[in-house]
Structures are given as C-alpha cells and as structure tokens.
Image: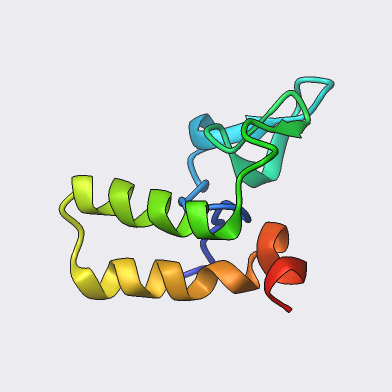
Length: 88
C-alpha cells in the first residue's frame, strides 16, 4: 500500500483529485484539500490550531469514524505543514 496524500491543514485524504484545493492559477494543490484551500489561499486564514482540532473531531465524529482513528488524526495535526511552526 502506497503513501496516502493528506491535507497539510486538516488531515483529510486528498488522493482523489476532486478533494484537492487549488492554486491562484487554477492548478490543483498537492498539499491542501478543497475545504481548507482555494485560489491559492486558506479559506479560513484566521483559523487557530485549537479550532482546527475541534473541526477535525467534529467532522470525523459526524462520519462515525472509530475513536482511535479520530485520535490519530488529531495527534498528527502538529506535524502538518500548516501547524508545524505553530506547535514547534
């Protein structure tokens, strides 16, 4: 099984190109999902790390994902490109 691409803001899988955000020139982002990133910018530029933790938990709970999967996603947030410097 190969590496999976995940949004470097929220952990959402972005292997499906329909889930990817886009750059200013319209090209697809290989780093961010369509919910976090559009037209070359974050959709919520003032999003805090703590708010993103809450969003991830809420959205994954709505999908009825296992608790351990949710915990792993939240635990990986500090290592994502968007949050790495914030939590370093």
